[in-house]
Image 1 (tube, rainbow, N blue to C red):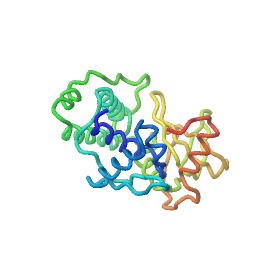
Image 2 (tube, helix red, strand yellow; image 1 turned 90 degrees about the horizontal axis):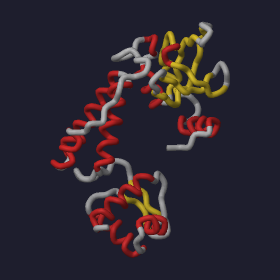
Image 3 (cartoon, rainbow, N blue to C red; image 1 turned 120 degrees about the horizontal axis):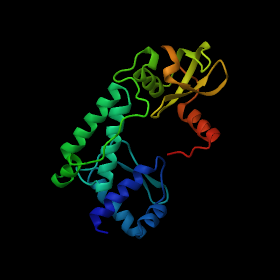
Image 4 (cartoon, rainbow, N blue to C red; image 1 turned 45 degrees about the vertical axis):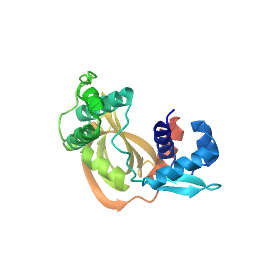
Length: 235
């Protein structure tokens, strides 16, 4: 492995850790000595990487550091293309537009050879099994932009929900996640009426209103509890 590749791998390792990670763990994963690791961290810091920490404490990469316009493998480029095309085709109009814009920004800074691979990708997203309404969803499809913003801001939502038997109820929920599937979009939320985490198909939400009130627990805590209850590993 060249030194440039090693520095890139070190940055990627630090990005995967949200809390300080020890030098010993980093050096072991990279297959290098601690002395080499310390030199590499010093080199990255000199190039502007916001790496906090010291020997004996651990290291953490602060948010916001961007790599130069390098280094995607062909597989990584194809994963980005396929994922962005899926989002553009399956999500709401605002998120789909963001996926296209993100790919345009990535394409603008890729080296020529990698950009040609991106532009020439033959990986396509086929039509949904049961196509969902195109474009920005109506109230009947729950306003996905509203749902995503409420999840991001940890805001309560007031909604009316019609179950599979056609019975409609008024709920106040704490939205924590949104799942996109071919046949449905599903909101995961704490339901104040049921006093538990529930799943709501967005096409069964008949009315939706932000309350302007933050819910009292952290979304990440609720999301961890939901994953544990469902037996889902964290990404």
